[in-house]
Length: 151
Image 1 (tube, rainbow, N blue to C red):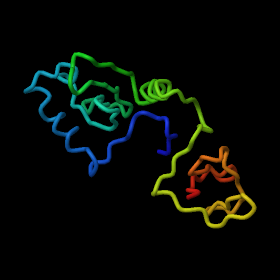
Image 2 (image 1 turned 120 degrees about the horizontal axis):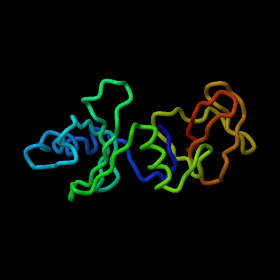
Image 3 (image 1 turned 90 degrees about the vertical axis):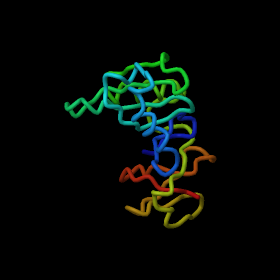
């Protein structure tokens, strides 16, 4: 997902720092991490010393989310589902609904196909688009809904 620079949570990429979250998951019962004791925690996001986990025991297709502080597991929060957690995370980050302020480029999106007179042409539908702000590094095409990088 493409979120603005102000979004404080980062979704876990196993290659970057996922091993710590999975080690925390596996050691939760032996180390007395009570916030996670009754669930099978599946890590998905991190904000510094805070980790967000899905309840892997939930089979509803819409599992609850538990957030814990890695250093002090008595500090925790629960959310009914991902949508509730995401709303709280966006609120904590001071952002609302799209279009976001300061959209960050993502290497998984294609680079803009062509630039002319300040307009960027969508590599998907070739419609001309302008960034909402001069500091944006990515853009959402208004015609087809594709995100693409500007730089």
